[in-house]
Length: 502
Image (cartoon, rainbow, N blue to C red; front, side, top):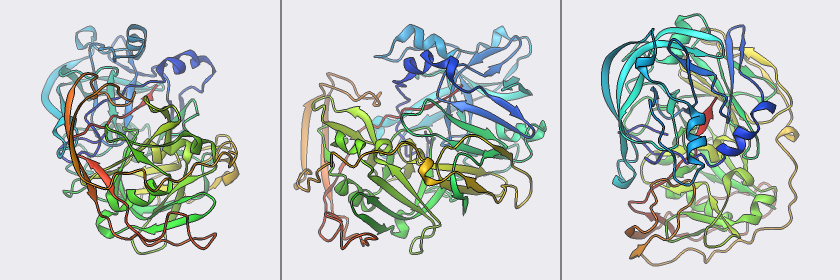
């Protein structure tokens, strides 16, 4: 979830629809581990290894590489549609007055979330900042400053653990010592670096490792890229894209225009948001159509094929330093459309603002974020066991290691049958404005309200020809020539399903 004023994610905080299933399987899943110079924390369930205060108040928070603050809630607001009481209580909460070691409040701030170009997506929380003891996986940070929500309502969550730098830069101690800074100061890790492994959509857990990386969770060498600033020059965990494309029976590769290259890596949102020139070929080659809410849908059958959506990282106009081939079963969500169970929501929206790679893309990669050197290291995700290596210090802090997995370890093999049919006529060809009453909402869109009367304007965006090359055949069925009208639904909301940090 990206933080305003330069947010690309929606204001909607998540409906974590899989919470009940995760809670039922806690006993069989891996635990948090404190090693020599690193902390390894599974993500995706609710055993709450993060605690605050004396006595300890344990709490589950949402891991977010799109924002910087750690903040928690003193109360629980159920999420509509979930098993409200049990799910809400499972997250935990933090009440400052119940802690003997708390200090403060020491300050107050209003944090805004949402896309500034879409007023209906914007929301905010008012935080009072306190200092108290923070314990993660047995490692304790004394007098860590964090926020406690005093105004606002974020149903279904107990807080957010931001892992991005402050928008003003990577400086230590500004505006206060963020948790990653404090881990170094306390000698828990050696440098301000962490790795992120979200795993595939069907996996029970992923992991975040502070101060380390797991060489049995990726294939090949880690490719190094400089972190890029956001649209207004603010500090972000962002990268440059060089190509996009798809692989089905044929492979298509489309160069990324320099103006559309930068994308924020944001674990705090399910959906990816791309400019029309990048979204056009992907949606066309997936056979996507648009529903009345402005969401893209594709045949659910494509999730059962070996198709991939491909993202090349690197300098536009040059060969990618690494290409992540995201499985269709990750990019097309396991969420059938409410009006047609044969169609599933695509994890992609079109934006004319900050681009963002959400969980629908991040699941295909292994990422090591190095704040001190302002770099990110990327490799294709895989899983062949676990072997954690500590991250050191200095310009070569991230070890120059090769993943011990092969690409064959990138999850189960998926049959190519049935084949999803591309439908080039699925998107309307004329602009129109429509007023309608919302009758149904997808699970990930918290801002969507059944019964609301909504007016939207749909505009066909002519994106120009995308250069297409084919590694396997003479040309992709829908990847060559012509224009595709990409529909940008103005003033729509986008939900996010956020990862739990247990």
